[in-house]
Image (tube, rainbow, N blue to C red; front, side, top):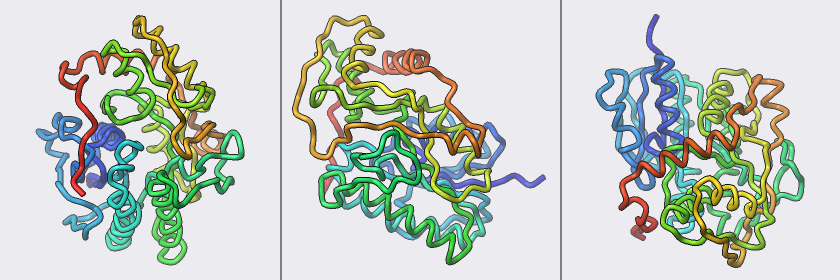
Length: 325
């Protein structure tokens, strides 16, 4: 049987690299693509010796050429943490719009099925809790987070347009907070920020009063959900995440207990448009994909903490990446 070929954009990022691993394990020929603006080759260097893996250093916001047939495209190229997309707002908008347009055009040309990575951020600061896929969201289009939120909302719209107008086989996954090995310690998100502060002996910073909630999904669970969605017949957006909700104050206390550190929690003002509640309704994923997360937060955090502890000391003190204007 002929080997199936999959293109994964954002392949050197946190989620993209884990997807590369999964498709390699499933016997696919994997073509990774990344411009390395936020990704790192260290996440995929273990795949370079493999005959069924190749890598293209390329920005998907520019025309994409991949020789040969493609069966699937997974579009995961995008800055995904506020610390990045607030510094590179225009690139963030371009990869969600032009990059998605290019990937959809490639899917049309290759007669490939495409899955695009959307986000819980399409719900903005939600007025409905938990968030199900029929909720249209509460997004500030001109606020600081709008560059990411609206890029992803446009991405969903153009993906559905290609599906209805060109009959391209499309899938849309709305990803909620995910964690695990290969996250960047300095990417600004709560989990790596807390663990990084604990490892450096710093107090843990909570924004606002800490009552805002998040729901954390371990990366292996997320990848399983994405894999099942890709191979399903479902074309509407689908939430994939862990509905086990926790306040950020309680979460910071869990990290202090996990790391055995003696730091205290310090409080700082809440950033503009920071969501107060974040919890996926995964009724649809359970019913259609037979999917639900299986890794407990306690178990996943231990694995993730061991990964961060294993990093060289200089990684602990790396400042967030600076980008050229």
